[in-house]
Image 1 (cartoon, rainbow, N blue to C red):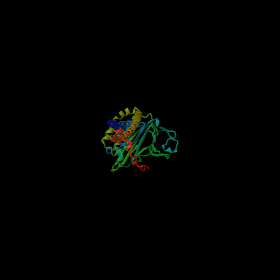
Image 2: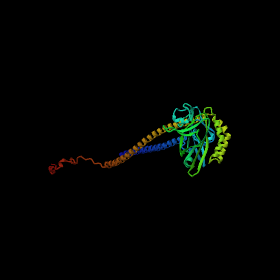
Image 3: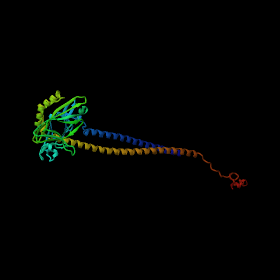
Image 4: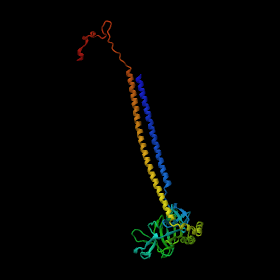
Length: 417
């Protein structure tokens, strides 16, 4: 009976041990689930921070806003080109010098070329079309960007133009006014320069521009002063409608040239240019914009242009700040990912331990069942007890087992041979 109690105690302890292992396995599985959820939350947080802190790139010209404030551009990227907004075809300037691109009316923009743009006339026959002596100082907007001067080109990439323009557009030089000459040419590798416009020749001077084109060229001004360059962008839409718009680009060339004067002269002539536009002359928006430019351009231009380079410096500082924020976010993201990887590895290890404990638990259960069956068998066998042999003598003085009573004659020794 005591042995049965002992077996019961052993079995009970094994059950407690198995329950403990089962609890540990559940705890390990719970840790694995929590780690997986934490990993998902961390990656969601990283994505959210990236969207909030890192500036999204501007992929399309259609995303550019519109601005009507007078500005001076003396460094940075800008393109002029046609826009098609609300079925109105207008030649505008895409200003990329700020935090975001802005489409501006040409009469509100002046390009400033200072001493940083001066290049000596090369002693090369390939550039003889410029008509200046070698070593002469020229004011140049180069085809390849110079960070200290405007980088002016043209494009046909505005969203409405991309969707509606049939094949391409015609860009025409209608006239140039200024104290010197203007030459515009294109360079392509080691080939000779390709002349596009020459202010000493007659007008118009036409160039075909493909749809979705973006081009930069060399602008060469021979003398300092104010220049007005009259341009027309015309084309045909996919629905067969012909469109055209003529505008004037303003240039203040030389350190001592007042950009306010360039804007004022442009404002005086902008109304005539609007009347010559096939598609925008009758629009109330054009008339209102021209009147506002004529009445208020001097006031706005004075406040906007007196701080030369202020816009560029601010933009550079903003860009640097955004880059630093991006680097900081990237570093934090890497640190978080490292910690998450460590947590995942620990969770994986805990899961493996839990699986090992589960296997051990199953083995222990099988062992307990086997030992339980053996203990039952032992208890059944222990119930059979053999009685002892009584060797005491009888009343006659002889033992119950007397060797004298054994008949040796009846024993056949041949049975043992």
